[in-house]
Amino acid sequence: VIRENKGVSDVMPHLIYISREKRPKQPHHHKAGAMNVLTRISGLMTNAPFMLNLDCDMYVNNSKIVLHALCILLDSKGEKEVAFAQCPQRFYDAVKDDAYGNQLVALPMYIGSGFAGLQGIIYAGTNCFHRRKVMYGLSPNDIQNAKKDHGFTNGTLLSDKETIQKFGTSKGFVDSATHILKGTTFDHYKSLDLEAASEVASCNYEYNTAWGKEVGK
Image (cartoon, one colour):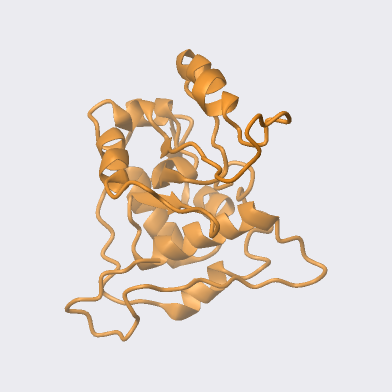
């Protein structure tokens, strides 16, 4: 998590590494589970409207890639039409003819273009800028029918009980998610609750919630 720390009283660093809890007999859901934990913790620490998903074995060869992604996501039509902006994977030092399609050339270059009329290509699992409110289950219909009173899904408002059932029992995270869904500012600089961050990173936080089904990965 990259967090601005100028003028704040806590001693948290500018760059924060997240390590989630795992237990042998509890499913961790692999990469999807890791992304969900990062989504919740970053929601408490920064609640930034966009998130970057980049695997540890990937690197970016364009210094303006963040600018390009934000131009897409911040476009006037992007709010209703763009859930994420992703870059295709490119592999180096592989076999030249690629008989088995391991370099995934056809998918982004040809098949992906064909998906343009079907709401765009699918999320490929990495190299992607996500819109946080979409990660929380917001659909284009919700944006068009937005009401500024509470969290909502499928065009209908959620009660406090429904919000907790959807996002979990952390009050701090529920507050941050509600602000994102409403499009209002969440003042995360007032305090940084490390206990709350630890709570949403626990291996059993997602039980009996919509995480992995309607929310997150």
